[in-house]
Length: 76
Image (cartoon, rainbow, N blue to C red; front, side):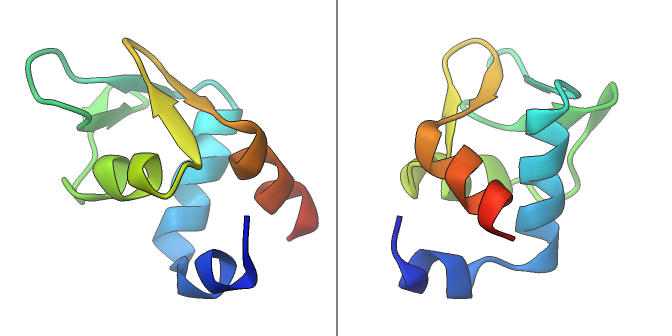
């Protein structure tokens, strides 16, 4: 994790990371890494791929924080 990644995260990104940490996210089937939060499709279709490519979440059937994502949340 770098400060550059941390500085580029929006409030929405941080909220999604918190939802993933709380176990409230799944990955929509057949939609790549589109996230479903509390049973509803996330309105930002790019947040899942963006956080996954930044190495903050893993989306392998379910959404979970990576060690980098967890460290970023704990530092906030």
